[in-house]
Amino acid sequence: MAAAPLPSDLSALDWDKQDGLLPAVIQDAASLRVLMLGYMDRAALQATLDSGHVTFYSRSKQRLWTKGESSGHFLDLISIETDCDRDTLLVRAVPHGPTCHLGRDSCFPHAPGDALAFLGELDELIAVRERERPAGSYTTGLFERGVRAIAQKVGEEGVETALAAVAEDEAALAGEAADLLFHLQVLLRARGLSLSDAVAVLRQRHGKPHRGFKPAE
Image (tube, rainbow, N blue to C red):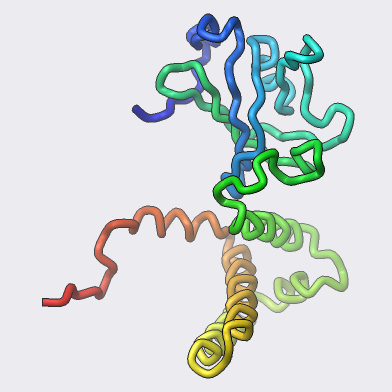
């Protein structure tokens, strides 16, 4: 069964199964990486909804605890949904700084999505550059030159990546691919899109024959 939106009546959640607490899996809204696991009682869940900062019930402190209340590393709420049994929460949030008390981004250092998480972070940074246009920034310079110039740059990087694939070593190919990915993200943002929009299309196409693909006979 699929996950479900959080019910407007919080009493519809199964609070009795674990003595008034619900496990809350916290997920980075951009990278979808699992950041941590906490527990919420009704008051913590309501505080999260009211404040927009993810708040837990601390079993060790025996009180409500807002992540970041001492470190400043808040988790800004994006969405909450419940599982099919209504006894577990999935919370998507935007982290401000490391989530783990050991200074790591996640309490699960090898959580799925780790290798690609930086693309989500880079996409967010590019969005900030597009909005604020800080002087001296290479990315600001790209946005100031306009879509046509950025598109030309993407084309150049695409050709260089293809050439590196057939004529250079793996390190050179990785470097050119990194340049291509960066400039493609800038181009998407210049057109009012983001990396997540392209990923959504890939997800829709997954498992379907690619356009122009003809299976071997």
